Length: 256
Image (cartoon, rainbow, N blue to C red):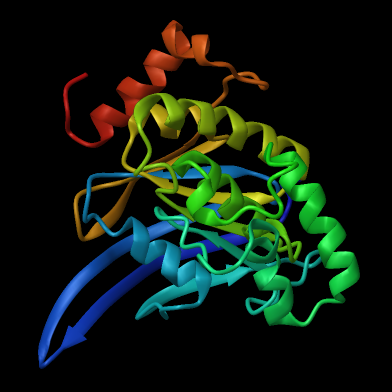
């Protein structure tokens, strides 16, 4: 018997309205996500990927369809159980790296002694042990994004939403961050929705891939990525990896 999904979207539709005009951002998105999966949302720029993420975060309501997060065994509180990582790290320049990571714990009112210990553990997990007292401007772009990832995990959320978090990084740093992301996900066991416009990144990271068409977003395909874990960069040269990439290209109406 298949487990009850942790996230269930059914025929989700979103229309933005401004000054009497309407803009259809999401026309029809349906998918189920099991707890502990890493799902990549891939599609062209402006197709509605970020809108889907905002609906999951509770920042926007769907105009029609159903959105359900949580199940019989895992209750869900959006105010407490979501962590977010954006394309820019958005660190507060006047706070140390440790204090930046602690910010969500402060907001939700967690006991700070335990939160501080968890923050230090997370900084070790993302390879930033020893940088706790540094300031954002003293870190590289990749290190700042690692800090942002640690911040998203510090209050122990059940769902991590990531909106093109590596899009602003150079190619080599991005590949290193992809490896770090897989390691952090595997060690944490969190459910992650990862928005990207990179087909290679979508295949490399995900346990499942959702392909969205050009806006307004519509689900073209949703399928598992049956490549073994742990994954390393040479897997990108394999026939199996290439077959998944070609499947996404085909879903988007592109030639591979």
